Structures are given as structure tokens and as C-alpha cells.
Image (cartoon, rainbow, N blue to C red):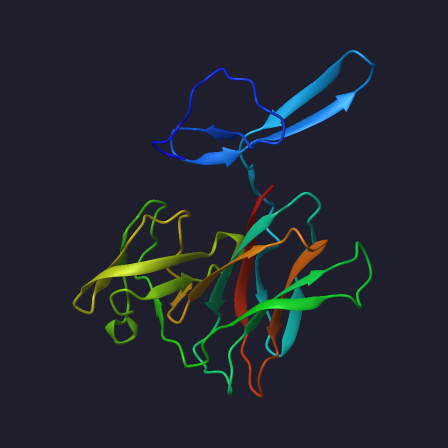
Length: 246
């Protein structure tokens, strides 16, 4: 453990657990042995978990009102943990019915087939009406000040907002407002990743979720974007990403 490292270069006594220490965390070591003769053996030691940023399970795209979409399926062989990152953006200002979009994380115990999916986690986005505002000029990548055309729709400080790029959905992005300058502009926490055009809309009521879970007991994982979750729904933008640990 940190601050409690033992002596170095000692032989491990059979039946004891050894730990590898990287200066911050201690990890139990796994010794794997394969004997290929009566007198020799090959041994390897794994000292820490490996984190992998997976290809996006659902690349950012619009989802029409009253429809559902499924992410790609992630095979979980050898994966012990996963963190699913969900980004939700509005495509118009109209409110939903009794419930906003549901994001349902599903897992399966089998390697194929569709009748074994089970819900293991679920998050639901808000349903209230959103505000929309347009920038009064294009904003270059890295920009942090957004000058707007209408102060009546400016977001509040701390709001997570979504810039819907209608030319290229992949260039849309989520931002957090940190400073409001009267009714003329607002400042975002981090610089824009992409250059954004003035003729596209910025929507309030954006949301982001993170779901961390143990996955060693499952075989597959996917996320269902249920935009048919209440009597009245509206078009949205969605993105689902994942980091795994093995």
C-alpha cells in the first residue's frame, strides 16, 4: 500500500499475494505459468489494469421525435469495468410530454441473439422547454466568448448548453456558460473544439451523464436511446462513448 512498501528483490512464497506499486496505487500481481517441459516454465506478471478508450458506441447524430436508436454492441470479453459517457442535446425549444429521452444501458449474458438483453442502468433527460440563441458572428476554434443576437435567450451562468451544428452533426459540441455579460454575450468554461457558424443555434437544457459499472459478469453491452419515452417527444442530438478497464 502507499507508504507501506516492503523489501525489494525477495522471492515470493507460494500462497502469498504480491503487490506492484507505481508510486500512487498498489495493484495485486497476477502470475501466469505455462509449463512446456519438465524442467522449465514461462511466467508473466500483470501489475496494473489497462484502460482503453473505445470507439464511440454512438457517434453524435440527430434522433427524430418518437423514435429509438441503438448504439453499437461492445464485446466485454476480458473487460472488468466500463464507464459509459452520454451526451444529450436539444434540437428545438419545444418541451416534451411527461418524460424526456431515456438512455438505457443494456447487457447480455450471451455472445449473440436479441432476446437476452437486460436493462442494467437507465438515465432520463429533462423534459422542460429549452431556449435557443444564435451567435452574432462565427466563433473560431478555441474561442471562449460567444456574442449573441438576442439577450432574451441567453443561458444562465453554470448552464450546460449545446451548439447544434446543422451543417455537420459531428462538429456539434457541448459547452458550459461561466460568465454572462449583460444581454450581449456569454463566456464558456473551455475553448471551442471546432469553429462554429453564426447561422446555427445554441440550445439550453443540454445534459451529460456518466454511468460506471462492473462488467466482468456480462458478455455484451449496448445503449438504447429511447426518444419515444412519453406521449410527446422532440428531435434531439445524442452521443455515447465508453472507457473500459481490463
